[in-house]
Length: 267
Image (cartoon, rainbow, N blue to C red; front, side):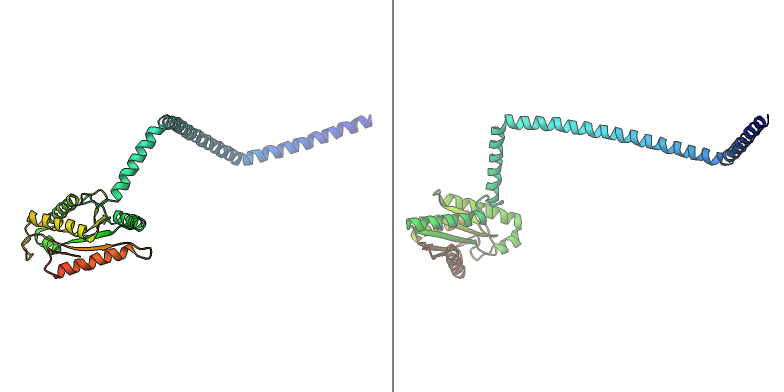
């Protein structure tokens, strides 16, 4: 009987302890319920925000994938088109490249050769004359008192004179290897391969006379019209020679022509 009472008393103590623990837990829950509820709401809001951001990111990714897919399809079509028409494209590209290269070697105002083209041709003709032993001549042309012409009549009229003179050079330089070029504002140079001094002088006089015949009025010139002075030089190229010396000689003769009342040819 005593042992039964002892066991019963032990159970009662255990139940009382559990009841006490439960009361403490309930009291704690009640005291911190607001904080727990606030934390739950905060966590819930954060989760909602993350879900929204994920949805937005997935939509953006979907759009990017759509664009990439379209670009991939377009690229495949482009590659197929290039493959099917490669010969035609190569021909068009080569044609366009040739046009651009040609423009880069021409004077934009007069459409004759520029300095770049002249320098290249001079090197080639110098080498060719070295091999063949043939003479090489150049004519340096400068329109007389051209700054005064521009000052009086304006640059538009001046440009028209330059264009007209370039046409004269074309007309007088009739052989295929002859190359007229604009090398400065009103300075022009003609390259005469396989031409001696007498042949170059004949062409130079024809140029001077053709411009004189145009009779373009020039009130500030003693001749009353636009004229040109021309310096000629000729050489049989040698290995130790320099093409620049040939140009320098023609330039020296040009200044001689300028000093002798202009509108003349000096060689």
